Length: 412
Image (cartoon, rainbow, N blue to C red):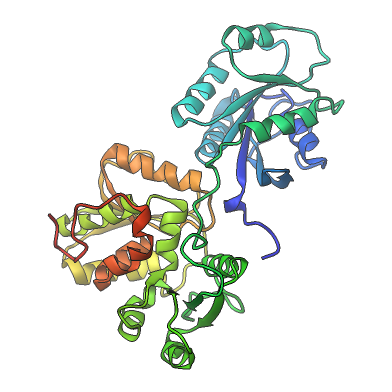
């Protein structure tokens, strides 16, 4: 991969009222005309995303948002989209002008940042203008702030340095496999080809895992499940790790000797982006499902639906065969995710390769708050295949000890 995926970048959300210079600020930070700038309030409607590098942090994603004081029916929709950005924000910048009397608009943002334990900084833009209401408020409340002028390009370098200081040390996701492999380890990636596979390329999780293996000097073989046995026979030594697509778990598990560590791309991303232990605990909800229970299938990206679509076709079929229950399904994709989850008995999430960890953790926290079980595709398929314990074993040292059995239906 030549570019860092958006999902692996530090997400910096830029918030504030209309016409405070948010778009001008993002242009100054990037050094490009990324966002449309106008004297007309409310120019920014949908969030604008701009990838950039801020050394020494590295790859970042700046997000310009609509004014939090937007008005009218359309204004309310714009504000909703702005609030969605908060779900994926790792660090927040609240832009004000010197004469603004800070009130509920900004205070609600601060409460959200504090509740999420997100670092934030007030930026007093247009510092060449008169007025001290904003600064007086920030000093009085001991909120961090900087003065800049996006138009005159003053204070921008200091702002970048402050962003580096404030960037949370844990914003970067957990490694994919870098902490469980060593240089020269033999790793096999099993990548089946079916109608849902994009023509001429691998899917993003496979590419990212492959790249991390190569970055850590592992010796990597990439095969389809139909060639796995031949690959194993040709190797002079047993592989240190086999990573498979979850949809061929049973086939790969039958071929692979029990002593060879096995996991899947989905399990790797469950740990990388989410909460592996929550997903493992959540899958036991399958044993308590009843006729009429509602299941939420939560995809984090949008894609063309294929005949063999995993979320819409395969998972409902597998669950029908396993539970023998008349279950009802709702599928959401992209940024859509219900805020009230109480009617669901189980949430089954995708791997989340296209979104950042903040978005995935937001969904997990909502599920925990609503006391709704949540798992992901890979954990579900491993459980249904009877090999859940085996595929989480490579990561077990990093997990809090689970006080449950891994076998299907075997709960303490």
